Length: 84
Image (cartoon, rainbow, N blue to C red):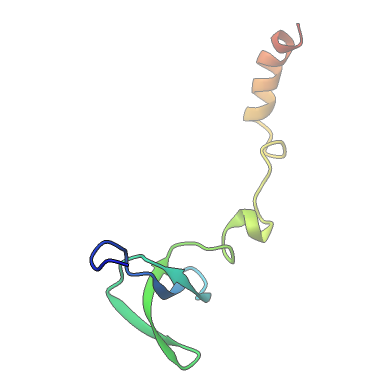
């Protein structure tokens, strides 16, 4: 590989700020901070959400059908025209 053309691809520690979940994976994202994880020091990248806190992955996401109100209004207004 030629010098200066390729990104710095290395192991990076990702931390979910909403619940403190940490995981290490390879990435080329730019970081300024470092942190230790399982006895080794890694570049640190902070996340707002991850699979451990996102409602879709945790099963706490609400379905559009169960919200009522707006959905029912829409179906009442436009549901009849779509069936024709």
